[in-house]
Amino acid sequence: MTHITVQPYAKYRLPKMVLKTLAMLFVIQSNSAYSKVETHAPNRTTYHAPYTQELPKIDGVADESVWQLAKWQNLDHRWLGPEYSKADFQGRYKVVWNESKLYLLAEIVDDILIDSHQNPLIQYWDDDTLEIFLDEDFSGGEHQYNHNAFAYHMALDNQAIDIGTNKLAQNYSHHVQSRWLQQSDKLIWELSIDIYQDTYKDVPQNNDQAKNHINKAIELYAGKVMGLMVAYCDNDGSELRENFIGSESAPGKEPDRGWKDAGLFGKLVLVKE
Image 1 (cartoon, rainbow, N blue to C red):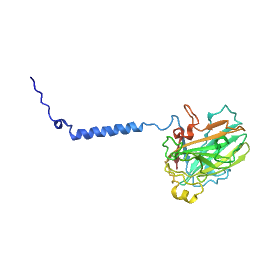
Image 2 (cartoon, rainbow, N blue to C red):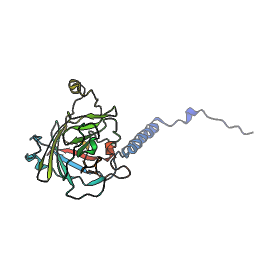
Image 3 (cartoon, one colour):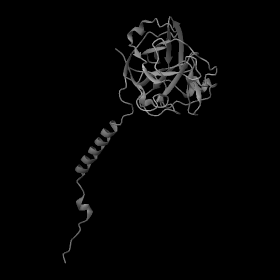
Image 4 (cartoon, rainbow, N blue to C red):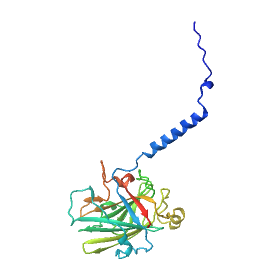
């Protein structure tokens, strides 16, 4: 009978240098695979927002020279509703920034203005509403009942509403200063917006001291990348909005899902020349 001698496993260990090399290759491969994970839908736009030292006055006039530095971005993707005419709706926006805030200017053509819900926390999306979607770190992902991103619904009364972590509508007007004026057939809408991270904590609405103590708006800087999408809910007299039109395409089912999916947002880059 032939006897086979089994050598101890230790004699067949790979040299330490080989093990280190294999470990490094594994880490590189893992990082490469991780970097390929896409958090956003394809064909997102990129908007470069210029820096401003001149702070725009939020009054709906938009006569500051800084607005001339920024480029317009159109709201021309129909997410919900039938075809509409240019007389019924047109929209576009532009953005500038400084260390403490984003400033957004929207120009809206809307032939009928509707704000039929007196309580700002009830059915606010069915009035004429400018909606600002912001993702502080451009991480994408779900944000339905968390603050991975904000979806500020700006009503004609200039209040900012979004869903809080308690799954109920919350008033975030302390985040956004908003004013609009009608000029000819256009609404000129100016907003200044404080930016918060996803660690933002909801506190009682009437506790201003807690709001200021717990949550701090971040400081902005050149080169920062954020998620941004802008939309408009258009109601011409119905119980529900007729149209929902946004700045980004929305592939697949639920084209209006930006209120819970930050992966639809475009890329906002803060630049300083």
